[in-house]
Image (cartoon, rainbow, N blue to C red; front, side, top):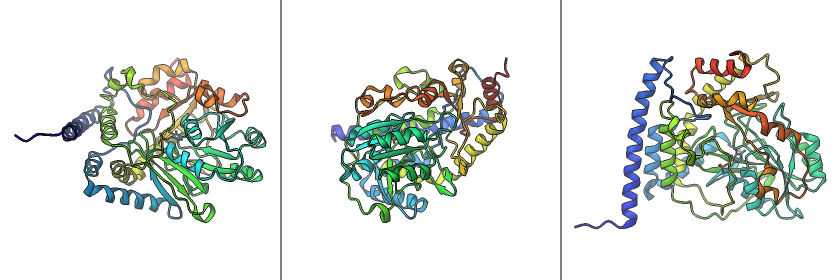
Length: 430
Ligand SMILES: Cc1ncc(COP(=O)(O)O)c(C=O)c1O
């Protein structure tokens, strides 16, 4: 009788699990069609994720194929080529995550700057702190304007005067930060600007796509992003400004778990099923956590295969999100106290629609995909607080942490769901 090794058995198990996940995708699709034909059918358990980018079953199949040696190299080459089409004048390196890309951007530009210290937006994803710590930098925070999500420029100048050698300008929810304005200020202090375009979601500023707004930029392909490959990231740089870099990366971690998570998320994001993961506390969906830094790793070929598919699907998904964001903009045009203004010249990637709402009003809307954004400022994470070289109050970021929520822009929501959300947040429901 043929014996299967432990490794062989777990490969076999992973394949079977993936196969059953794929068939669940098909079943969930049939349910989705049913809901489409009965738009007012809203059973109590129906609920929506705050952010969603579909991963077609074909993408998951090509990712499974990329698990084999034979297809791995071509998946990575194709991803490289597809990204190069979006960023023709940039060098690029595919890595395990956006956090890794940011960590590498910091380490690559560390030499010759004295005591490395990076200025980070006080209101942002704590992964920025993780990359900072991984790169061995100290940090300072600069405040964020709650009306626009742009940097508070006087606070940024204070951080630079106090010795920040680097600045990270980070886009949020598909709205772009004015990286040029940040660069103009930073150049007076000889500081390096890194564009964190993890959440640019296809947005452009004066015709230039996020990820090409600074000589050094970072992308993420995690699940909550516009380009969802279930994970992965990229470092982009302009070699005519930055010169050549060479990086040493550890090999990619095995991708089986990541693929299973991507397949499960794809199935469970169906509105008829999403209340299952939403109500499992161990999954901590929507919670923002600090993750300790990891050694920089390469992107897995299976992630690259998903990236190719998500890049091909981007134009249609982007258009749908932008249509929904335009709808919110029109419906909420008189509610200036709630809205966050978009930067002039920015065509939003509409990853989520940011709105300043009282938590009590927003909480009941969680099943409709209305989610609290970052509930803490970066200084509230003990690991990040420990590397801050200057500590000062950040009133804008504190206000955002207390009020900022996002409305879903993805195509799973229909107009009557959005009408319910708008009526509730504006108080028109009484
Ligand atoms: C603004 C921002 N930068 C960086 C990252 C890190 O990306 P990743 O999750 O791919 O490590 C994230 C993740 O959510 C993010 O939102």
